[in-house]
Amino acid sequence: MENILQYVFGKNSIEDVGVALGVLLGMWFGFYLFRRYIVRRLNKLAQNSQYQVVRFVTVGMRSITAFFYFAISLAVAAQFVVLSPSITKAMRAIVMIVIVLQCIRSVQSLLATFLDTLSKRGNATNQQAARGTFVGIQFIARIALWSIGLLLILSNLGFNVSSLVTSLGIGGVAVALATQNILGDIFSSFSIYFDRPFELGDLITVGSDTGTVKNIGLKTTRLQSLQGEELVISNRELTSSRIQNFKKMEMRRVMLSIGLVYQTSLDGLKTANSLIKDAIMSDKKVQFDRCHFKEFGASSLNFEAIYFVLSNNYYDYMDCQQVINFKIKESFDKAGLNMAYPTQTIFFGNSPSETPSSV
Image (tube, rainbow, N blue to C red):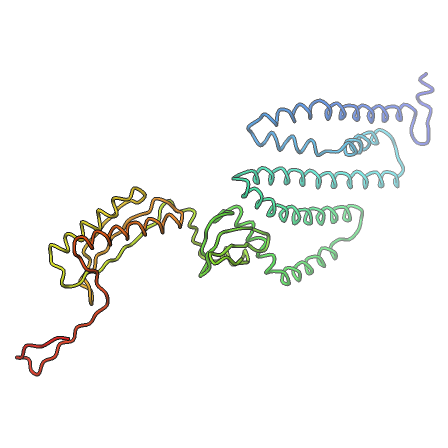
């Protein structure tokens, strides 16, 4: 029996070949059990776990293919036999290619899981907007991963990739210069998603334009203006501009200015102050701040009142102002107080000692 095991087949004995086959089958069977039982148990554990790390580890393990396990098993088993240089070189190349491809697959799976976790934050509209942004992230990441993987494969196969890397570098600079505006808009869309200066449905003002956010794309963001037309603004312009987001407001400030004629008596001015304050405080949807006789204007005695509408809705803001203005007008009419309008009085006189007449 020992003589048979020592029989040399090529450069290897039957015993060496048997050990190699045993290692190959043993490792393959061990990997099979690992995928079938341990990975499945981890997958169930990840579904019920509150820790994202467990989920990422499970996703990484599930992304490993059976062919990768077989290639690793074959590479280990090959160490127990003597192979020709050409076969050894070919096997190393195949194993290296399998490892690189598996790394690309695993990174893509982890990135997709991470982006999917981020996209589930917020309401349904925000999730929909996030998916469009994340498609661009995955596309760029896929190009980068496959480019690096291809260079690694070519380098390990013995090709001189230094000139290729130089050419890619020069080409990359040329492409970046030619598409800098597009790339700027794409990276700005990432900034908009992660920083969240606004979301879908928000009413915002950018420069002189005001509208409701309807879509956040990779290159542009679309607004529905108050006049009804659609505004298309580049993401780079949005991130470099000052944005007013009215949806973030909890209340709206109103400054009310009222002028009375100069013929109004002191008691009338005090009455007007009380009437303005009562009209504002009678509305439960607003918060009164102050009311003052502010100044002696050019043609009127001016009052200034400040109050806050307890809503960020523009229609509530206008409705409250209208109701308060109606109440002030009604109360002034009942009290006999006259609001001023722009007038000018001209005095005539022949000398300083004469009493002037007016027109």
